[in-house]
Image (cartoon, rainbow, N blue to C red; front, side, top):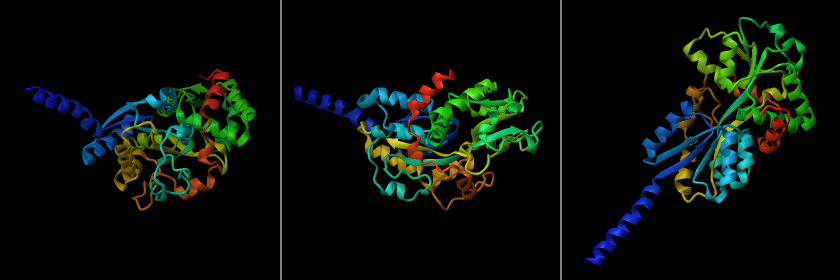
Length: 328
């Protein structure tokens, strides 16, 4: 009888481990509306259940640093390369071949994370109230009094914070602080995210906004006459930053194999095709159907500032600067 009870106990103790082996905990700074279907398809194709914690990229990056070796996360899927660089010491090394098939512009040479999509920073504006002559040549021009009270931004957004980090890398901290203070003095209006900026323009609240390229496509998909357009600044301007979303495996995870399967899935043609056609982002692997609403990748590369993604990892420095000027 005792041996039978012992057998049941041993079986019961083994079940959680077996279940755990077929689960995956993902910290996602990407929104559920876009990546939820990708994760669901991953679950269907692999039989691995994904437990996803959605929050802002910066918030999750901070949480991972606080949790350290005790973090329950297996994968961190970040909205921008800056957060990936900041968290890189907490990531496990990836097999070099995982990054070999991705576009060189997005590739992490240290194999700490994989890019999952590319995006370009753009200026969105009102088609009804803005003439071509009103468009600024540089993001620095937005501090001019002619734009006072007309520009939207989202200081708490992870991609905006990555842009500020890139601005610091390109022009120095003093210049970045001067630009932020200039925008504040020019009464730039704070919105909670990129979509809210676009809606603010459509509603007549502001005339311009600073967002990622893929947001406007979501509105145009349902209304081709949506009264907002987008453009880039002059070639090489820091406002045209080319960034990536990407994912890495948390070093402390005891679920490395399932985490690796998830990253491989994100780089598969199925996932990449969905991300570009449904999400309006640039795929990181070749050979896919092109999203015709996107400016060509060659053009975006040509006009983007020459900033190494791995250089925009000082998220803490940017957050400190944003607090200093009163934006956080």
